[in-house]
Image 1: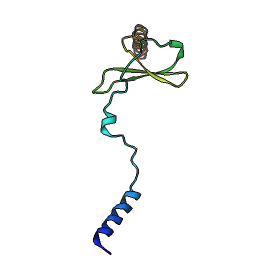
Image 2 (image 1 turned 45 degrees about the vertical axis):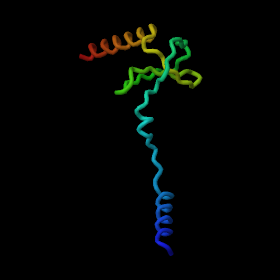
Image 3 (image 1 turned 120 degrees about the vertical axis):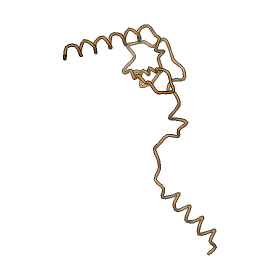
Image 4 (image 1 turned 180 degrees about the horizontal axis):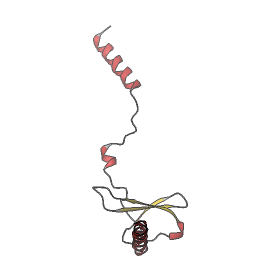
Length: 99
């Protein structure tokens, strides 16, 4: 057998049996989740809020809706600002009661 054929067969065997990686490419990891935000989301349709703060992106708020859609909410929205203030105050009170 020709040496080139052996090398090609060996490379194909390694490629076929190589483990599949679940890692994302760097270009996808460094992207911001929210590229655009909405200002109006009915609060009663929100199931869950997620807050993301990544090094290369601004503060991001992701709302998971009851219909399983995810939307990015503008962090400057008045009701969201009030929600965050209330949550911070609640955490401060809880910490003071523990001490």
